[in-house]
Image 1 (cartoon, rainbow, N blue to C red):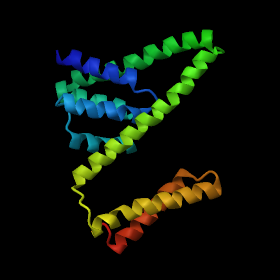
Image 2 (cartoon, helix red, strand yellow):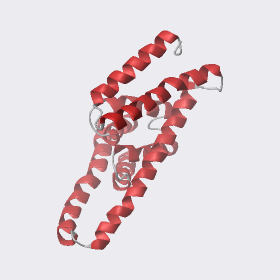
Image 3 (spheres, rainbow, N blue to C red):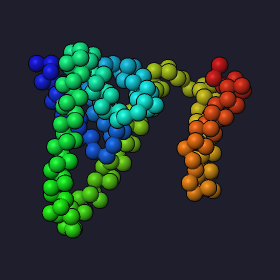
Image 4 (tube, rainbow, N blue to C red):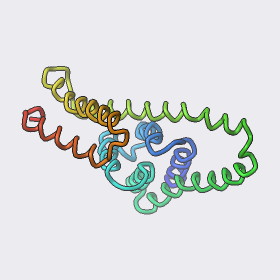
Length: 191
């Protein structure tokens, strides 16, 4: 029964998480509430690791949740459930897009999906921020204001640099973030 549940949950995740890996986050958080495959704390740690590891977040989370729930076979079943929707939808979309490529209603449908994707990413951002603040036990104090300064300054610097140089290199973004982190580390903000 656990294998069927794993397959079904990740099948639905693959079916409804349209627009990229970050749109899967609200669905994954919902799984933490419905099942004991992973806790919110483990989920936030997995998200941090998943951001730096190559590959889709949902795929790594399906492997992890499946392994937590039912070992290696559970990992395989959950991953298969996630991948099944992608493969079948690609075959169906390719078939129908050839037929309806110039249909204006199909184009309108794709335009209509854009705000949904933005909303899913916004919800994911808010949920991850909420998890991060809850796990850090942050309370409002002078120290917490200083903890918010480095990311805020980083965002401002990156925004200005992106506007000025048109195409700001990802390596320059990483280097800028490292320099700001070092400056604030020496300043004692992170102590």
